[in-house]
Length: 484
Length: 95
Image (cartoon, rainbow over all chains, first blue to last red; front, side, top):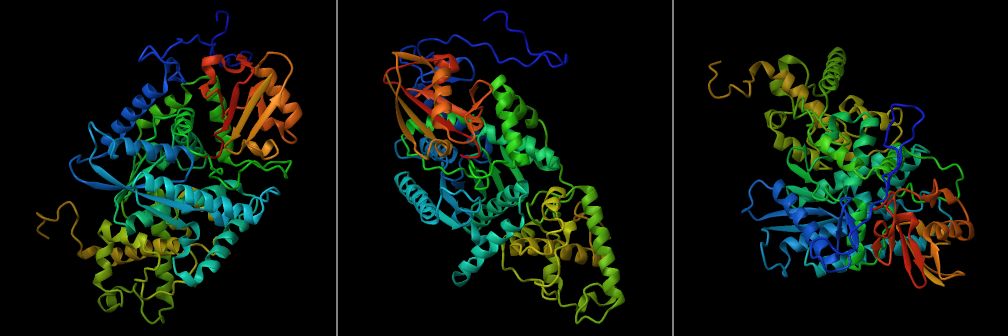
């Protein structure tokens, strides 16, 4: 179409115009025969068999890029929500390693993990969803996932979201209650609710993968989701960890890597693939706080949904928006100031200034505890460090990342023998800026999952220990050849 | 003419929580734009802005015509004929 003015934002009067409509080829541009079903990457019209081939090839490419040793039989954890992206990912994995693959079969195994969020349904107050119906949807999703996983011959582990509080059988109801309360106390702050849910879910997947002994998690986030996350994370003050969250490989947890092999696919492409798989779409929106709510006329949006709308609108105007955003973030890397210093809630690494503030606050505490030195074991006085109950055993952990991560995973890890876990408040300095924003002012009233306090404690503790013995430590760099 | 409509991804909540609809319209064919407006005016009871925005289907909602990408048929200017199936798939907050 001629006469369509080009996009220009410099002049306040011109408005962005949609890309002019193209005329597409009548047949698939690859096989030149069949009727196309999709416009792929703005110009290419493809039929279903050709489309499937193209997608599978790209997916295989991403998986091989993310592996260091292609000959080693690794097992990956696959996080399955049951939505189109994760189901398509499961099918693509089957195209790589399934029994029907004749050529270039890849050498790895997978184990699926599904986080059951049914405990949160009904929180959004939709009148047309009653309890039994919600329960049924939850069960139906689980049943469908079980059937699909068994047809792909992939083992599946289902973990309820409330297990973020531990996994003892007898406390299940109590845990559900605790979780619901945390989200209820967030009141109308939808951004915080969504972020907290996201962090809890990621932590659970991570813990489960760790228990199963899997070092890599495949996450089915599409390019739309990652682009939205890029924008929303930046606006929430998570700029530091944005590259990690959105690139193909996410290294922010030292022992486990999260991989986004669906990063190259738009939701449109995924939805069409999903449809051609012929799966029943049972998806409830993965964000339980934002399913379309008919009761509230003033629909309160969150930063995440605003970013979603913004990106969707831009993508509609120019179909290159998402690719451009993701190509740009490709060039960035998240800085790591200190590997042993990470946020207790979301595990992203803390920035230099955050670490400084944390050190200062810990220093103040040491001084305070020195002044009223009548506790039964003080780890802080310099002259009795050898006799303190936290002996060299745990001091090792401050120097080794592996141990730190073990502590990070173990919810009920009680290695802080000289502190009372339940009563001490959470040290907010052990959180990153955006998690502090979520929990600020509420951290004392909320019953937070134990892993947060554990992480925070372990980190403060290892810092204290390291501080005590710092004069006796050799630098990591000159371990071997230093003569001190 | 008869048009089959499929709604998914949460969009069905706007249409009395029903996923599949069959609408009978006068004439042999109808531009998609008119069909969408007609659906909004006659079948969306609340919050129509979640379905139609700026004269087209809200960004983030995918449209398939007979299981084919609507862009192949001309997007919102596509012509819907008797017996066609139009699917609206919401990709918002899901997946």
